[in-house]
Length: 245
Image 1 (cartoon, rainbow, N blue to C red):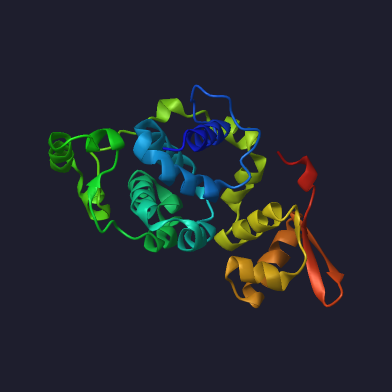
Image 2 (cartoon, rainbow, N blue to C red):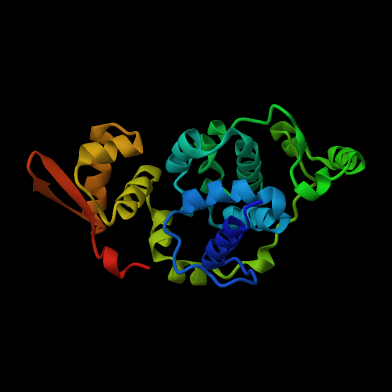
C-alpha cells in the first residue's frame, strides 16, 4: 500500500475536522478527489474508512455529487469503485434530510466488485479470516462485494460544525449552493480562481450552456463570482478567491 498516499489522505481529513494524530494539510482544494483517494487506501486503514463515513454522514452537503460522479467515471480505477460505493451508501444510511440525496449520482457511477472479498487487508490474510468476514458481512457490503461488519460511527472524533466551517470556508459555502453551482465554484478554484469561458465551464461540469449560464448568474448575484467579456467568451472569476483558505 502507498504509505505517502495514506499520510496525505489522513492529513486532508484532519484539515476537515477529523481528529487524527497527524499534522493537518494546509488546505483541502479538492474534496471529491480526497474521496477517490480514500477509496484507494481504505483497505489498509479501517479507521480512515469509518471516519470518512462518519464525516460524510454529518457534512455530506459539502460534497459536489455531480462532480464526484464525473470523477468516478473518468478517474477511479474499477478495483476501488466498490469501496467508494460502499462508503457513500453507508454515509447515506446514517444521514438525515437532503444529505441523503447528495450522493445518488455518485453511487450509480460505482460498479460492484466482480470478485467479492473482505474490504480490509487484515481480513484477507488467510482462509479462516475470509470465511469469518463473509459471515459477518452486512447486506450493503455484500451488495458491493467488499465484506465488512456493521460500521459504528465515530462522531466523537469530529470537530464541531463551527470549527469545520471556519477552517474550510470554501467548502462551507457549498452547503447553501445547488450541486451545479458547487461544481462551478470547484472548477473555477481548481483552474486558479477563474475559467476563461462559460463554454469550457459547461463542458467540465457536463451541463448545458443555458443551465451553466443560469447557475453563474445566480452566483454572480450572490457576489461569489464576477464575469466579464474576453473576445467572444465570458470569463468567470471567483470573488475574493485569494482570501479564502
